[in-house]
Length: 88
Image (cartoon, rainbow, N blue to C red; front, side):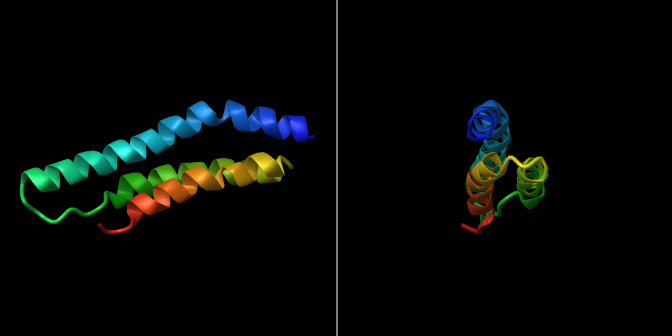
């Protein structure tokens, strides 16, 4: 069972990289635009919430599939996205 968790966590790395990368891109572009227009930067909550929801949904499916180790691994990208949601 431990091997299945490791294989699943490794297989999810590209998906997590894409989802977290999308969140970083959305936050970065919003911050850049706010800096360019001299407005206060606000995090793009809709985009970050969608990305975080996707990561959490994957974690719930993994938990229900009894891949507890891989599900716990999904906490890392969820925390990264949650940090991006904090106001600057």
